[in-house]
Length: 128
Image (cartoon, rainbow, N blue to C red; front, side, top):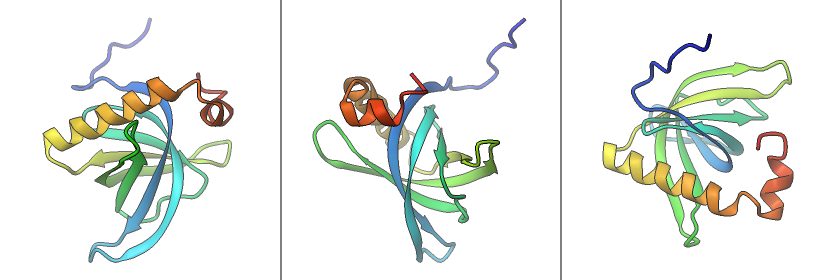
């Protein structure tokens, strides 16, 4: 029997590329990389990356359907290595509730309207 969902905000499974800039506690740039959002909720993201996110804060960004850069600060809650060698990280969004919801809306909308796009279908073929 499946366990009931206990989260306050349900997760939406998606597969969308996202860029991030690692930032230290003083706000200094540590590096940048790309990952894939595996799922999203009103308050956070789960992403998969090739390298571990080794900072506690990061600036996450993607380009929305209007070709505008959308950014939000996130706190890394966990980062663990999977059997495949990739890393899975839980991110808590650090914007206001309205900013968080706007970011997630644009991210999910971007995924749904472009999931059949050639570049994404090759990147996320094993997820859909």
